[in-house]
Image 1: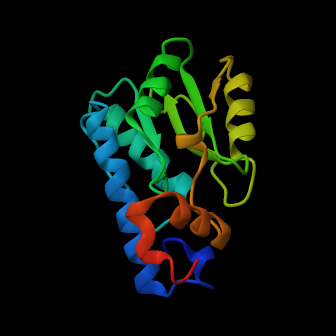
Image 2: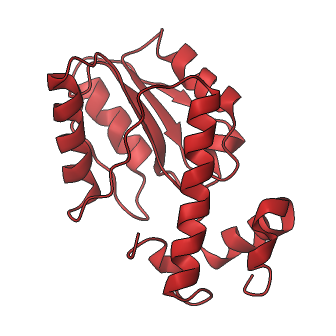
Length: 176
């Protein structure tokens, strides 16, 4: 968590960024529980995100998992209905992508867990790259567009909107 939300360093010190990241992670975990997702594992590796996710995918597949739902931890607007929409879309395709407002990937459902080479990147249109990789492997992905999945917290403007919209995050109002 020490490296979390680095792009907010201009408005939050390390302790503030850590607290915000933890609060958002707790929300995502609670939402997954409300949606009936089990088991849930948190990956907080020290390598790059793609390597960490690929390692996690191999681990869960070796343990017998047939599906893998990856959800980023900075989704304070996420609701159980958003998770249900991802799962429903997974009935139509082995690759489901939740696109972030900036073109990134905020959630990804894959079946089996190692079916796709992961292509996460900060500030890059990874949703498009994930879709291209799925198509190159002969799978037509489903793109899920929902506000709870699209609205992540990356910039000071995102934080300001969150503080304005969401009472649980008003403690950050002095920085937004």
